[in-house]
Length: 362
View 1 (cartoon, rainbow, N blue to C red):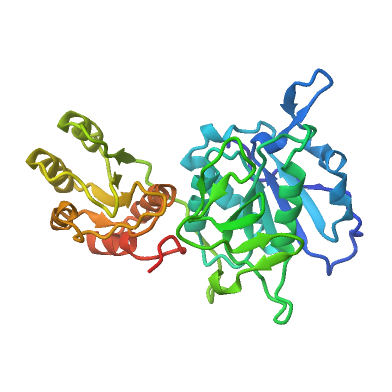
View 2 (view 1 turned 180 degrees about the horizontal axis):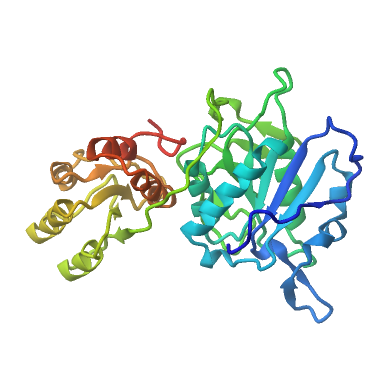
């Protein structure tokens, strides 16, 4: 996102007076996506002028919050999002972290799960809510989900514990339709229905019905240390998905990419892979070149248990790392993050196989 960090913020017209310093102060960051599209007189989808957001969504004026907006002058389609954009978002949140009680990021759905996972890793010791949301149907279209998603995301971000009066959600999350999912657990599963995201291996953090039902036992605790924003990601990574009939040429074409540092290996079932000598040799040669290989199940509800079957036992001996029940989206962003730390081999392997931001269940 080639936008300077010193853009002016836009205050939205709400029912809360600017002098009411007790009302939650929330920042809406618009990066792009369907949620930022509107219908013109010719019924064409065009980018919405976000300085008129409260006109398109008059319900915002009824919220008891101090809302401010930061929109990119050139919105980016989420299919074009890069690690540089994640670093930019992390720096932007860092810049405004002390001034706001929470953040809502409007983002395209196609890569929202990747962005949410990346921000989860980059924002260490996060003590305030950062919620991604968007829409399947643009504002102005019949039955658009944009307004409901944004309003509910804002309500979640503003929530406080009824007794402790502390932050209710010190995490990165993805809100869509009626659930809020941990940022490192989200996966896009629908392009035609409103329930676009699911979390198969971890319960939703919030369910939105008539009221908001917070699953406090599943939400991470407030950190004891101040926010630390990381500024480096290793982009020399890849994803290799196995399929019956995969050849050594295909394996080597991916694992042999010059300078490759890490690869997410999508295997069958509970982490199973071929035992053919050529296959094992491909993995061994990659390991010898210093490529970290993280084993992830192709099953949406899968969990890697290397050694449970003979077809996965050899992987451990070759140095392949078991990813437990991590999603591919979280695995590839975790590889970028951990390898970007520049640690030694032992520490790198430790971080890749242990839970950092709630991405795995153990």
